[in-house]
Each structure stands twice: as C-alpha cells, then as structure tokens.
Length: 49
Image (cartoon, rainbow, N blue to C red; front, side):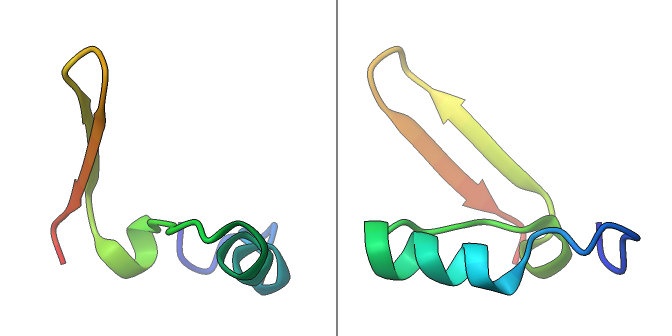
C-alpha cells in the first residue's frame, strides 16, 4: 500500500514495464480498488479511479 516500508513498487520497475514491455500497471494507492475478471479466455481489469 501507499507509504509501505518496503518502497514497492520501485519507480524504475514500473517505468521498465511500460517502456520495455508496453505494459499497463494498476496500483491500489493510485487507482483505488482493482478488479481483475476472466471469462475463461480474456482478462478484464477495472479500477475505482
């Protein structure tokens, strides 16, 4: 969560996922509640914010 003692996620890791892999990340401290659902073949991700 926000202000955790471990410093996760590291900004460098999030930036690398976006730049190198083109991946979108969801964070509960920024996006609120994150829900991942599957219909058996696809994933849908939605958040409160």
